[in-house]
Length: 168
Image (cartoon, rainbow, N blue to C red; front, side, top):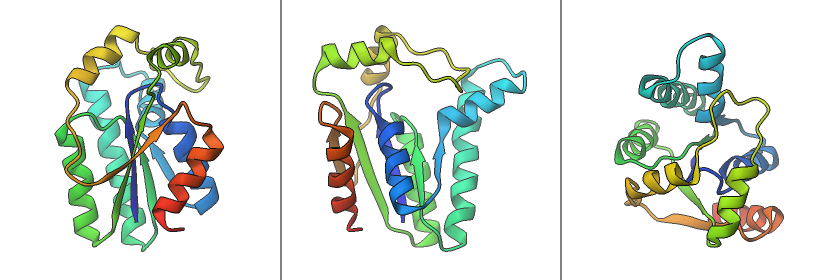
C-alpha cells in the first residue's frame, strides 16, 4: 500500500503520518526532511531542491514497494505533477494508493499553528500565512477519493479514524 499524506503546511500531515507509520511499522518519507538534508549539504534552497526532494521520496518509496512493503509519503502534494508521480508509482507496483488529505477548518488556529511551529531538524524557513494562501490557490484536487482529516480534531482521534479508513 502507498499511503500519501497531502495538505497545506501546518495542517498536521507530519504528526499524523508519523503516528500512522509508528502504528503500522512502515517507513514514512518526508519531503521536508529530505529537502532539509539537501540544504544541510550546502545547496541553496530553490525550486530544484524541492523537486529533488520529491524525486528522492519517489525513489525510496519505489524501493520499498518493490520489496513488497507498504510506505507512507509526507508532502504537500499541491500540484497535479506530484499527484501524478504517486499514481504512476502505485500503478508500477500494482499497489493500492490511499490518500489522506489534512486540513484545518479553523483559519485562526491554522495561522497560529503555522506561526508557532518549530521543527528543530528543519533548514527550511517556515512559510508565512501569505505564502500558504498563495500555495492554496495553486492547489489541484485529487482525482481519487481522499480521506479528509481536520486537524481541529485531536491527533489521537484522527489517527484512529485514518487507521479505520485504511482497514488496518
